[in-house]
Image 1 (cartoon, one colour):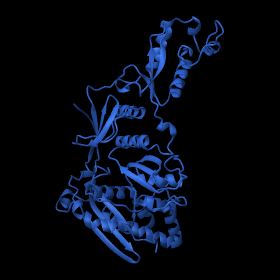
Image 2 (image 1 turned 30 degrees about the horizontal axis):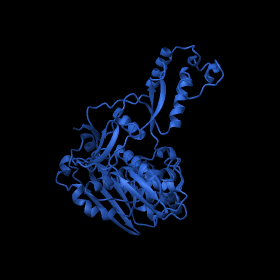
Image 3 (image 1 turned 135 degrees about the vertical axis):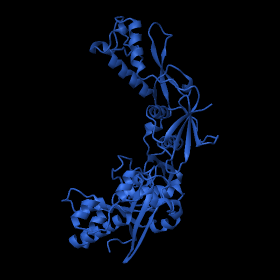
Image 4 (image 1 turned 90 degrees about the vertical axis):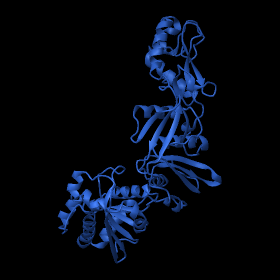
Length: 465
């Protein structure tokens, strides 16, 4: 026995390679429970045309699937055949992704472990360069009646496993399978059941500790994969903080699109103040820079705060900062990089010695505004030019807008409403009430500005009011 649990080889034919837009046209399934082997195959009506290229490659025509059941009609019977099994496929992410999306369209969830036979072939036969199915068939001399049909390709994978066992021995194949299946080990004290039910879907997750303390909030395109990686600290998803405190539960909120995930993550960070999230992301001292024209001839930057001034309705703001320390640091960098006087900009105080200039005079970083060598109009002009690069953009619309994100699999649409860079909340498309706390902050501004420069696929912008 190669596996300790029930397993199945699955192969699909589809209308194309886009996991969201294309549909399944044929399913081939070989199920193995110990020594018992069962087969299931069916054509599926994709409810969309099969492109000529795909028809020529697979031999499955529009006429062949016209009278066949759509996936929704077989989903209820098919799910028990797959759920809980180890699913094997050649490039398993493709087949598993298509199946999972088809089940999502009818309100069902498929959650199974997977094994990619491409990876298994590479591990068993590292001396070979190619590991596509045609190469494997040729390499092992597998005899098949046809190719590019679902059951035939599933049979090819079964023959490949049998050939590998015959050539290398069952123990070698089992060890290779264990290595391919190897999952990051959870640290002691973390119950595997906490992550088993998390979805392999995009969303925002919250790790909770004792006494309902929020430990960490994160965002992921595959929540379960990222949480396992983070807890095991395997580095697969980048450097995430190691959770050293006891974990009591993990919650996940699935999201429709990337913008919605960012907005939800930001809201939870503000509301929960999780212990392990970077403190700078949780700072609540939003400030900006305005130019003060009232003290002599020189324009002087002044730090202004969002809790004292409505940034969403204030023009001529320069930069958004999480703290006054960050604002002063940027002013110092602007002074040094543009020959401006740090004392005029308020970054440093002048010495009391008569006639002494700022610290930048001696190093040539200041052109002498502090000692009368540079006139105010010239200094002001250069200051305005330097600050122009960080000026907060004016709101580009005559009214509030809704960014509409649509799940291309389920068709569910969500609207995220903004006005004057302020996030007002989110709602299901067509609803009036908004969920979420209205806020103007640096993260929302940057997020929406980036979206407007490059709108995400599957989203649209709608003017309101």
